[in-house]
Amino acid sequence: MFFPYKDDNPRVLVPYVTYGILGLNILVFLGQILVSFSDPDLGIAVVFTFGFVPAEFNVITIITSMFIHGGLAHIVGNMWFLWLFGDNVESVLGHLKYFMFYMVCGIGAALGQFLISPSSQVPMIGASGAIAGVLGAYMIQFPKARVHILVIFIFITTIAVPAQIVLGLWFLMQLSGGLGTLGVDTTGGVAWFAHVGGFISGIGLLRRFQNLRLEIR
Image (cartoon, rainbow, N blue to C red):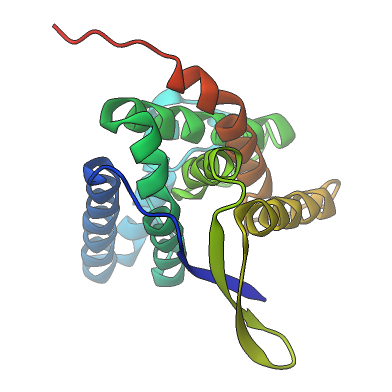
């Protein structure tokens, strides 16, 4: 197992949008906890109401699902990756284009899972698909940036390797996990192809958003 914990890539802009997305996700998660404590059935209903259910395709729930999480480990892992890599991508794109990029990658992630399991009744939740887009953009923009990772195997150590290796390996793990579920009747777990779809969206859209001209009047 490996876990990235810092990079040697200084930010240029203060990542206000990344902070905002982090804060919103945390606030929504705290709201979920309060609802679940008061009424566990209502907590489950929140997931089914605001999560994206492929068999009931709804653009609105694609958006809302990006801010719903299934547990503490789920949100902590997602927010850590966003914290680590989001600031640099925001510096590249600027605040407004970065926000648009993040949301579009989240939509691309949902479509990736939908194409694989269009009849699934299992709600898809979490920010990981959109964050996967950020990871794809980071890998393309900063392939040689050194990422420090904690490696836990037979022993525990830390190493620094280029982003293209860390994030490329992460993508291959998601793809492998997804391919391993093809033809298997699952009732939950990781939406592997949302990660794959988000990552590919991030790679494909980065340059388009960099070249996008916006006029605010």
